[in-house]
Length: 332
Ligand code: NAD
Ligand code: TDX
Image (tube, rainbow, N blue to C red; front, side):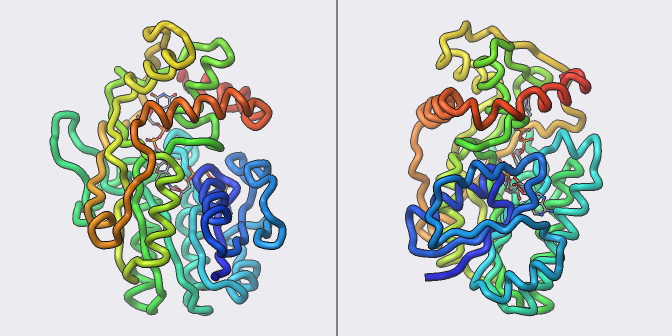
């Protein structure tokens, strides 16, 4: 049994990981989260008090991080500024949290010699052409496009340097686009579900042909746990579940599931620098560590996610107006 710190555990993927670990292992979990606009304490309601602690704080607070690392065995580092669109309007918080925050954690991991797993994204590899049959692998060169993905790439490189120079016991995973419960309404799938639920037409950037490789957050969690337990120190693992769909197809599935005509969406101003396609080859994780995704058909996982948003308006309702006001100001 281990004592694990989860940074960013009040965010989308971090909170799903906390629920997953507490339900499927006997580890205990301490969440360290600053509760930015993207963090929601309610995503962690109902967890067992004897195995779960919440610490409200910033990963850049070196004294707080030091105190926590002194009494834990491992850290899984999810905390980040995570939204590409926001990074195009105000990059500074991305540099602060994704670079300085990761640096602060690495220094504490070095001092206390605790196991470190760094959560990253497939966006560090840039994008692929729509008609290119290739997929990203661990040997694909880094080529990030946005302020968000460049700060994630920078944080990955810091982790690699702290492994090599200081012997920090770290692994890295780069995952594709996640979907599931507790995702902020600014993100594509929750935005379109909650638009339809509130009588607003979904908004597709550009032509809607950009492709994302979707994975359920629970499959991401099982992969991270597998790497934490069996991964080789210093190595990187790509996480993906072969879930490529273009954005238009995803919106059509959402509209159909909610009983609307499948063409009842609007095309809006494209995202500057919009990556065309992401696709992950997760062969290494599957063959070397024996991981498999559990969620099969994307449409079924998506339908369950739509059901969660339908049943949990009290969770997302308070965020919706502010998120849409930000988009309206950008013509999106
Ligand atoms: P999110 O925006 O939903 O959550 C981020 C969390 O981090 C929030 O709870 C926020 O309060 C917290 N946080 C932000 N700055 C902090 C700081 N300085 N100190 C402490 N806490 C802070 O993000 P997400 O979508 O859950 O992504 C989590 C991680 O997974 C990120 O590292 C992201 O790069 C990575 N990732 C996300 C996806 C995806 O599809 N969403 C895919 C691959 C990788
Ligand atoms: O209203 C929208 N309309 C639209 O067409 C929004 C919000 C998005 N989009 C498009 C842009 C992308 O092609 O949908 C796709 C997905 O957009 P996002 O949800 O913003 O995700 P993306 O930019 O792909 O990045 C996500 O996956 C990788 C996460 O936000 C990152 O944190 C992760 O690293």
